[in-house]
Each structure stands twice: as C-alpha cells, then as structure tokens.
Image 1 (cartoon, helix red, strand yellow):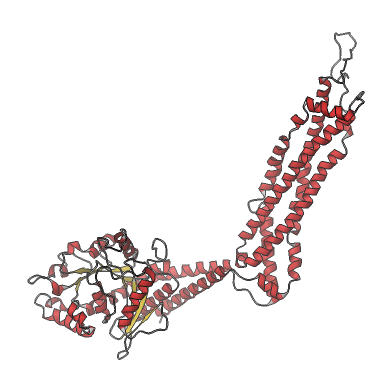
Image 2: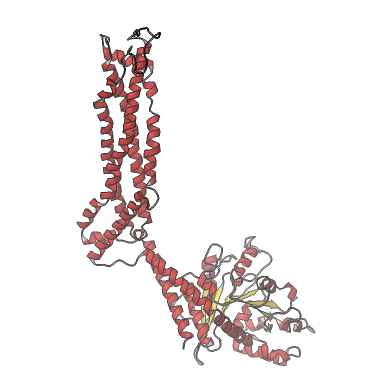
Length: 626
C-alpha cells in the first residue's frame, strides 16, 4: 500500500508536470480557471491579509528564510511551494521550475529569484499576476508537503495599484480556495479581533462547514500584556472542524540578525512549553506541529480523492488519444509512404466532395436551387416586352424590308426580331454557369476544410486547392461554350413547324363558324399589313416563339451545366493532380508534406500531456498495488 511520503511525492510530481504544460491554477484562462487535472489534485492554499504573518508561517514550516519581505503587497504571484524530505545529513537546496537543472543552496538567492521572477511578469510595480512560480525545497528538516502562497488580501488600493486590485486579489485567491480539493490554511494575527480576519471571512464563504479550513493564529507573543488567545485556540471564539494552531513568528530583531530558523523553531517550542497561558496546548502548537498536521491531512485527502483523480486521468487520456488521432501521427520518411499519404488525403477530399454533391453532406442542394429558382427567375426578367413593343417591331420590320415593303409576311423582320431576342438568353446561360462554378468552388473549399488530416500540411492543402480550382475553371469554360452553343443553335435554325401552325391574318380560326348569322357565309376580314394590328400580331407570334425557346433552354441549360461541370467534377476533379504528383521528385513530395508548425507544436504538446497522464496513472496504480 502507498505510504504518506510516496503519495504526497506522487502528487508533487504530477503538479510540477502540470505546471510545465501550463496546467496550473489561477492562470490557465482569461478568468483564472483551473484545468481539469490540476483541479482534481489536492493542495493547501495559504490565505491571509497583508502583514498577517503568512511569510513567517511558511518560513517556519520550511525552516529557511527565503521569502521576500517588505511593507504592503509583497507576494504578487502565487508561489507553489513543494517540500521534499531528504535523508538526514543531506544539504538543503532549492529548485525553480523555470530554471531546470539549477540548484540553489544559498537561500538569499532564492529570495532574490522569487522577486526577479515576479518582476519579469508584473514589472517593478505593485501589479499582480495569476501565473504561479513553482519552487521545490529539498531538506531533511521538512515533511513532504505542497503549499500555495497567495497574495495577501487587502481592503484598499495604494499608490501604484489599479482601483480593482482589491477585487483582483480576492478573485485570484478564490480561484484556488473555491476548488473542493483545496485545503485552506487561514492565517490570522492574534493581536487583532478574529471577527475582522480577512482569511476567516473568505474561508467561511467558500467552506461554510469548515471541513477544508485550518486556522492558524500568528503573533501570539505580540498580544497586549495580560491578554491571551485561548478563546480562539480552544475554539470558543470561532469553532472550526480542525483544531486551531498557534504560531510564534520570529521577531523583527531576529530577522535583522538572521537568526537561524532551527534556533527559531527551538525558541518557539520553548515559548509554548513555558507559557502560563498555552503550556497545556504545547503539544499541538508551533510550526513543526502544523507541518505534520497538514501533511497527515493532505495524505487523507489524497487517499479519498484517488478514485476521482484516476477517473479524471483516464478521461483525459481518452480525449488526448482522440485528438492525436484527429491530428494524425507523424509521416514516415520513406518516399513510397509519402506518396501513399498524399494520395490517401486526396482521395479523402475527393470522397468528401462527392458526398457534398450527392447529398451525404450539405451543399449540393444549392446546385438544384440555381436550376429551379435562379435560372427561371432570370429568364422571366428578360426585357422581351420592351423588345417586342409595337414601335420596336415596326422599326425592325421596316428596316428588314429595305426600300421594298413586304407584300405578305415580313419573313426577314420575323427572323431579325427572333434572332435579336434570342441573344438575351446568353446572359442567364452564362450566369448559370458562373453560379454553379461558385458553388463547386465553395464545396471544394468546404471539403478541404473538413478533411482534418489535411490541416497538418498547409503546402499540400494549398496545392490541392489550386489544382481543384484549376480543374473547375476548365469545366466552367467548357460549360460556358456548350450552353452558349445551345442559345446560338436556337438562333441559327428556327423551328419551322411552329410557324406553319400559326393562323394567317384574316383566316377563319378553328372552332368558329365565321358566320354573321346562322345561314350567312363567312366574311373575310380585311387586313392592313402596315397597320398597328398587323405589328401586334407579329409581336405576339414572336413572343410565343421566344416563350417556347425559353421553356426549352430552361430544361437544356441545366443538362449542359451538369454534364460539363458537375459530372466532370465528380469524375476527374483530381486526375491532373494525381498525374502531377506521380511525376514529382522525392524531395518535392517531402515539401508538400511540410506540416503547419502550430499543428506540430500542438501534437507535441498533446503527446507530452498524454505521457504525463499515462505516467501518473501508472504511478497511482503502482502505489496502490504494492
């Protein structure tokens, strides 16, 4: 079964790895959200108002003087402090996560590095940042423990701070202590009324039952003579589920004289042992007791949360595997494998494109919309009424007759009217071709965008798109020539049968008896071949013929477009590209498979994260099976 030291050490390793990958508390998003794995890991957050003695408590627990000091806000970034117990006799040293492989044995330099690293993010101002500093301290004089030192709560902004600093600090602190697995170490000075404690107020809001809160009372030796803090330490003033712990900080004189922390711990023990007020509580007072208490509690929290942590890790591994599969695995260096990869991606795009056309995916229905709505609407809007006005018909017929006016039917006038009217159909025919071309290009773009594997290779993606657009341009030109030929054929040879069926002027029309009376013979109607009625008849006949041609073209233009554009796109969209790729040199194939650097970085990040989670799962399983 796992020991306390191995469990806490395991959590420390996972937390460090999470921080390397950017999975840290309070800095993973614009709103300071906590990533899933970090959120499932137990932690201890040190919370208190400014000048409440937080730094002194941490230094007492560590047994080293290593934290920056000063007036006002000193802690301006979260400090994730991981304590690792080493063998007796080994020298103390510290390591920062942002300075790997560098050991600090001089803890004055540790203090300076904390200050310098804070300034790198916040500048030499009094601003704060949620991005944590990760520090590990190795010493035989510590217990295995992870503490998170947070900026001190404040009530007002001082010069150099934004007006929102009070809310910003509280929001940052809350982003940690709101977490259900976070143990709250609430620091309050004994020389102030506990009812005014910022730490207790916040802890009560986020942990009303007190299950996660440990109360620490500092500065007991600075209370007014004749007073004590027994009401608080014995739980009468404010009861917590866990016992209160009193701490005696080093005095400013001790700090100025650089009094050894080991000696300071000894003086603290003696203070409680010989204090008339606190001697009966001496066995559960002081920084050494606090460290052991927290370590034991952290062990119990870790044990309780192992199933939840394991579940989170398993779910994360599954999601990471899925995303890595969507990004694709690294490409082999073998020329045959590269060619195979390129052709497979091309075939995938081609299949997706056909699915769009055939209805497996959306988009192909837009082609039918062009034929069913846009083309008929365009045909109906052609200006035939103006073209076949009496004035224009008379003008065209007169010009066609020349100096000899027509005797019976103005055939040349008919032909000129019809031919000039049919030219109007060229516009809708060309627009139909262009509309289908636009839709096909859009479907190509969608198909390439939907091919997740292709996103890895921007060069191949670009060349493939260019080849598709080039093929569509060829189909468009062929389609445009064919549809315009259909229009031109209608003008080249008129349908004679249509005019044969037209009644001649003055002719008795079928269905009427032509009688003025029941026995009267039909009386021919005189026809003025140069009157308005005559030209109106010509306009009516031509309009009827144009309507017949319009109906024909409404059916034949879509056929030509589908044959020349849609069918060809389905059959041979990538044929030329396949031939081109087959003739490419090996080096050129490699250039086509140059991955997008951002995707390579993303894959590497996911692989690292996956490795972290897999190792974490293995270590947890190993710790609980041996």
